Image 1 (cartoon, rainbow over the protein chains, first blue to last red):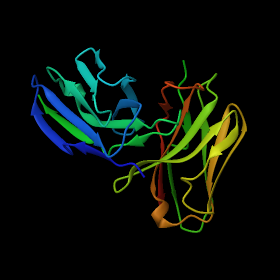
Image 2 (tube, rainbow over the protein chains, first blue to last red; image 1 turned 30 degrees about the horizontal axis):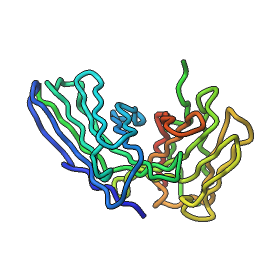
Image 3 (cartoon, chains in turn cyan, red; image 1 turned 135 degrees about the vertical axis):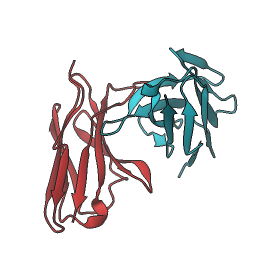
Image 4 (cartoon, each protein chain N blue to C red; image 1 turned 135 degrees about the horizontal axis):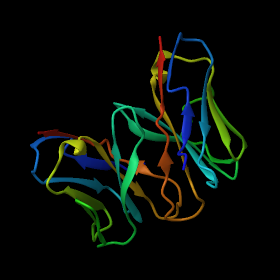
Length: 112
Length: 114
């Protein structure tokens, strides 16, 4: 099946710093999604990307759909303590309007 | 608006017992998904329903697992008999039908099989 490599696995940063994480795939996706999961809760959708090359922002978050359709990145600018959590990328292959493959997640810790 | 509602939030039971997890999707959503999350394997899709009909159950690990959706507002995931390796967090998610419709997740059921 399709594999998603998400990196880094974890990050420890100081409040105010910028953060970048990315996902790469062995095959092409038609949709890239970024979710955040807080402890004891389900993943919450942050940003959805539907076209190769697309760059989308949601507040301090920016994500891009790679030109090759095999990668995506998420940037968080000026991090704050509430950014702490696990961030997941997810890809949806062509030919499916429901199946998502998830990365293993990036655990973000922000020191105030 | 109410999100996806799952119950129970936590379940601890002994191996061999039957476990039933419940899910109420968001009203108006006609696609429903059951996922399992573990440290080793991350989030895995178990089964997908569309309009109450199971469309893809290829992720269901084995015959001990079964899922039903008797109506548009309720689904169950059952494990019988349960085993320690079934311990995980189980999520239900729902979405509107069609492409580019985001999946909305419940807060999950943390299942521990002793």
